[in-house]
Amino acid sequence: MMHPRVKVLTLLSAVSVLLAACTSEKLVYRDGPNYATPTTGAQGFIGYADEATKKTVCGSCHVEKQAAWQTTKHASAWKDLSTSGSMQSYCQPCHTVNGQGNSNNDPKAGFGDASAAQYHDVQCESCHGPGLTHVSSPSMTNQPLASIKADTGLKNGCGECHSGTHNPFVDEWRISGHASTWATAHNSTDPYCQSCHTGQGALAAWGVTSNYIEKNNTSGGTANMLGATCAVCHDPHGSPNTAQLRFPINAPSTDANLCTKCHQRRATFQDAIAMGRNSVHSPEGPTLFGQAGWFPPGMSAADSIVSSHGSVAKNPNLCATCHVAKYSGTDPLTKAATFSTGHRFLATPCVDAGGLPLKDQTNCQVTSMTFRSCVSGSCHATESLARNAFNTATARVGLLNGEATRLITLIKAGPKASDCTFSTTKPYNSCLGTQFNQSVVTKTGGIVHNPFLLEQLMIASINQLKKDYGVASSADISLEPQLKRPDGVKFNANH
Image (tube, rainbow, N blue to C red; front, top):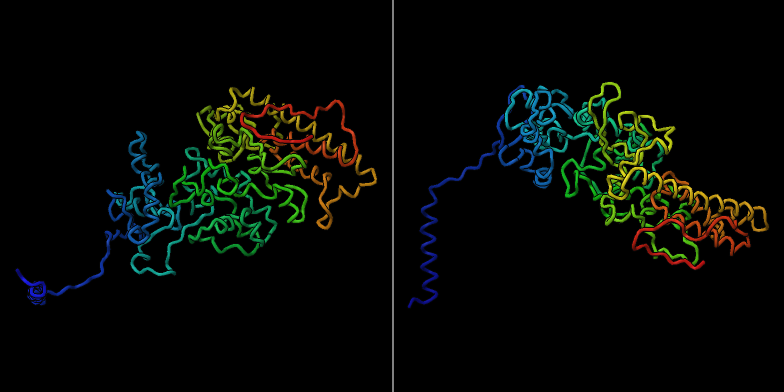
């Protein structure tokens, strides 16, 4: 039996012999490109390192972005076009890497020059522009940055492909409120305002650190402010959520749901007081989830009245069910089949003779509105029933709101009139609380977001005014709930 020490010495001797045998070998390291040198006509676009595995040249370094991007529809753009049965040459620029949609602006570059498989799909360079200079000598100063600005007339950005009769996302978005959120920021430099009123502010507030052309262009007034553009809601690099959204749309939480991350401001009287106001700002999310308003004594916020609209069980996509509803119809002039993507975010728009939302919704009356989104969400069996429910809720809550106004007028004519004038230096009272609840009711779309909550808030407010100020409500107005609440609704009020 060999002694362990002898065994070790023998092993070391063998290793020494092997090492000695390797001394004649010389390892030479050479830097070299991991991509095919593009043609001159490609204008610096490099595309795939391996088209079969969807490995982009950019992805060799930007591994996380590469992995996320591979899960997107952009990564299968060429295959989807090829298998669609409607491949046309004019379709190809939006399904390949070329100068369309980025700073290059030449659709003849990249795939337009070579028609090679390395340029298939909507890759990194489709948005960022040619990458050859950067990959040849990477530096912070030659990064090809993408633009997140959006409009139908721009050559650099999402709109170059996501617009037109085939894909009218940006056409619709540009006449929506999201396109001009910056206009109501009033040149504010307050990060709190900019975090929802500007695209740059929203991305910063959400912890998005990616660089882009307009990232630091927030000075100089509204000229440099972006609205809620495509890339604010959708992550171009991919996400685990549907449609590459940055946050889920089915989360019943104001801080987790994409829409309600902004549509939740000054929804409770505590938040309003903290900002020196006694009215709501954007209370849609908390209203939907039964948290908005001033809860009078005996009505606890813990007994949240969640609207059927705010119930994931009844309405899985929550806000998006109604506000991102797609419509198909016909062009009133050409009679050709056409459609709307829902990116005007209109829940119940007035429609034209072909069934598509009118461009001008200024004088849109309930009788001319379509309630198709209510039916498609499986909450209402027919448009007629949905319209009737809307009218019933509007009339009922409107009646209570009018009664509250009458009682407040009586209080203002009495010895406690000053109670109805808001000030941050005096105690809050039921007259102020009722006025705050009225601001929830009269906010555009307020009632339909949660008629059950608003009916209960107004009933409880009126009862509290009666108790605190001795005013009498009209005998013709019932102070018992009239609107049928969905199953499972909690409410606890001591009238």
